[in-house]
Length: 63
Image (cartoon, rainbow, N blue to C red; front, top):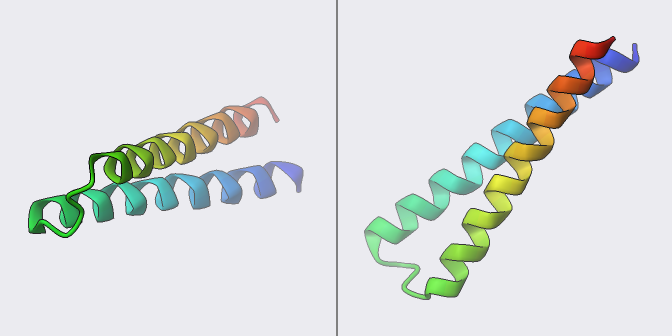
């Protein structure tokens, strides 16, 4: 049961990271986000979400 929780949390974090990264890319292409710091923060947030998701998948594989 604990493995299922880790798995679904991992899926949530990976999908959230992909969403945040894609939103940042789309807004950059359209020219809405011209502030470089906002883009860097958004990309850093997306990478952190992806890293947390990968770690949770790794923990799931241990069960």
